[in-house]
Length: 267
Image (cartoon, rainbow, N blue to C red):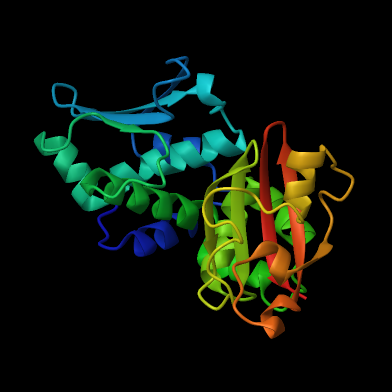
């Protein structure tokens, strides 16, 4: 097995050996890992990694009942996350020594304990493995930013639109603001370090009405979704001056049933 210290180094080394989209099941097979896709209940976990000392082998369980079907975007991210627990040294060694119990993964962006830190490390590993940095940057740098661009790149790497957008956000090429909501309530929001605003108009609670996402939730209107629409800062973000109020942004919203995901960037 590869023994490399930082997970950025690990993912770079792995990516250099395989084509895009990264073949996760082949990586697991090459490492001697046993990956099992099965139904484990909707209210349980997305993925779980455990070590069997009698067999000296790691097992990864992927819960298809939560949408983690083999080779689906969500299933690929979950498997990449679980591979992170195996390849990141202190995760693997803790499982081998029994200091970390059979590890389950169920996304919780609001946790702040030690387990949350471990999960974020595995998420970062997954994003780096699925979207190798050098190739990913080449696909995006010098391109006019749009939601359609993110969709094209996401399809190339076989990842979800949101995973690709988050990866792009951290690069800060074009500052963007991301928001995910369910039934009109904001579940999480994040932004590039150079984006001019830090929080939505109603904070972490209600989706602003005069946005494409707001139109979808409150008026059941989706005709403006999946295309770049102009919105004003005063309608979207917590602003402080008249000059800020007049700033224009593009919004690209992807709705799905009772959920929606939007990207904002400056016009």
